[in-house]
Image (tube, rainbow, N blue to C red; front, top):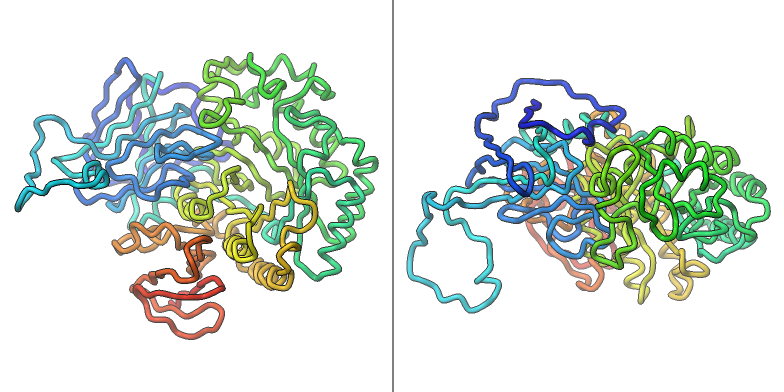
Length: 570
């Protein structure tokens, strides 16, 4: 790994805020004289050539796309990433290639990556054979190689950037080094790797306890209960004070702990005037309101301390050990509820920069509040150099295929993702989605708008119990995988191409992934029937995880009501 500095980088960059940043320079073979750069009216422009056969992956959590050659990617945080432009809950200016290198651009700006463009005057690749008449828009607009290609990276408003070039034999080697640059993967408690159930937002204290008893009486595994906005006296924006529905929160938590539960609370940072910290916090906030509340500048030590002290005194000290940090991304594709990029913050950051760092700084603040209390929580936005924070990403979107793709793509950027179960139109959909969360970084059932268990109306409690017991049995294996993530940077859930970089068959597979050390998971996507194609890389031997029977490597079709899982035999 080697850092090169082009121009004059900005002050506010992710490495500045990375508490465990761990850069150690080593020799690389990549020729750094390939880079050219210049200042333009739109920002700082970096350019370098791309190899003809290089495939490009990364840019953080991506729900719409796996591979990015000849695409434009904008690393902008967005609450509703519905298009293939790079917008994401967790955009990361880091990419990897199949040519033995990856690059991290240390910027909080919404950088634009043009992953394969051809300059005028380059050698034109003449098409051979007869001229073909295009008859469809897919043919007309398909990306085509027309000459020597370059990557351009535009960093708005900046006058320079630090680039970290990382080399490795496989994409996994490169990603591990990137994760270790941020201090390694997150350290999580084993209980957090079990089942989390988020309860109906209108429940009161007694109804939460009733739900807790339901899981124990029915022998359905559940390790964490989550409370949604209804626990607060005011939400959207937040008071961070218990509502009248919870007259004795400390007593409730004690009862939950006796039954073996941990408690996770929903919140966001936008602080309502009724909050006891509103006046003290106000001087250390941005100059625009969001959802009627002030926006704390967690890049200042004052805002961070005020907020963390309150969370510790009123929540952590009575037994809360998890948080769901909502709405800390942007909202350009939705109703525009968040603060604008023109916002000015006391730290000196502008709105664009703060949007990029908001989730990570918020997570750091909550970690201050927790102190020595371990957690495995949720957050709606993360970004660069975030691997060491024990927070999992989620979304208000709900397309099942996109959610499974997110499991795959999150592995390139040092972030974690859950394809959570919320609602279902049928028993079949519920079980398909449940299968996926069992084999993911966090097994999350989010019944925030549903009174009672979502499977009750489909009479499939037995099937749900069986699936969640599988998850419970995986917890020791997951803990080992997360410990390895912490120590070596190896993600516990990984795209196939990360380990099989020389296998071109893996370059387009966005619906299979490696899980823990040696499991390959191929979820059945709801709405696509009970048959799917599976590819097992031919470099290894495989057995069916559930039966132990050998399975021949390569491509084949499988028809099942269950979930295809295979174990690699080394």
